[in-house]
Length: 271
Image (cartoon, rainbow, N blue to C red; front, side, top):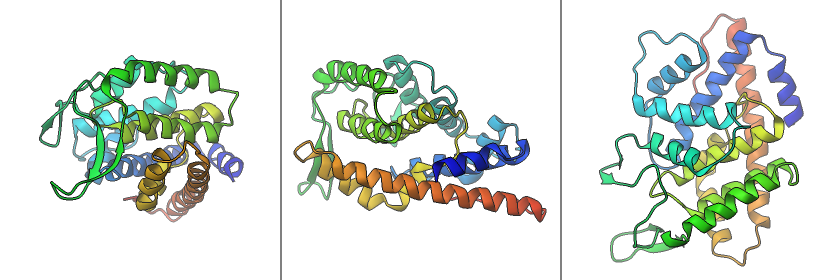
């Protein structure tokens, strides 16, 4: 399926290719944010994407925060062969929070979290919270991330690309190295690994759109894997199924763009 999709993308005319890229990138930006409960304005996202890809954007709103998110998503795939360093990750995370705030809370940007309080994923009312996951303490982050970077480099070419992307995603969100933005950056890293595997600078699918569609099971399988014995088999199975569904959805988007242009219509919208 992936090979067929790549062939279809590569066979598109330049204008259609740009339009397909735009639709998929809009979907990715909206959904990677929606997974975290952040609802982006679609017209602002489309404005940023169109400007970056050289498509019409006159009259569309401009939002710096969205521009920075699009820059991160594009850097992950267009520059997949650039080294992954802590400085690069710090820059990505800082770009997601240009004000230094997440909602109304001041957070650390451009560096690993350093608070003394445990980093926990919780739900439920105050006083009756359920702890789903507790990340490694801040003092362990330098060592954990050094191991992560080492494995990231050593696994390139020696571990199957899709399996490697699933492991990168899981490992990064488990370390949870930042005050905020870990989920969005894990998904950007996943896309970077897949781009490395395919040697493609063009984003031809939106994994976040499919994760959003299966959001409840996404968090369930993460919690189960992170609190289990260390066996990642179920996570890999879930991820591979998600990836296959994302490929199917991308083929639908390509067909919709082609159909809309053949009838002189507008590009389809992806929310």
